[in-house]
Image (cartoon, rainbow, N blue to C red; front, side):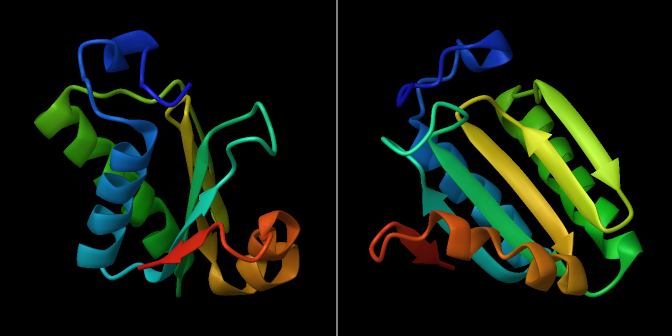
Length: 125
């Protein structure tokens, strides 16, 4: 799964880590809070990476997810496999990378980093 292959991702030759970093960069430039990349390889078949970010408002949750979606679509022709947007949690599935944007309280409640952290698999942006 390391090389991106499905849907419109087929024509792109970027790795899953490169995609995760591009997503993290967009979140960071759009003022996403506490942006992290979690390496999941060998831990689950769901994805190779999660990218997590926090937002201070429900409007910002949607806006951050939409900004990533728009930038990847325009600049790289990448379209998500699925989107699940809730006021306090947005999940956007790019196959090998899944983006999670949380309202700050929701992120604190679910603590996904704690569930997947094994000591050396988290990159903080």
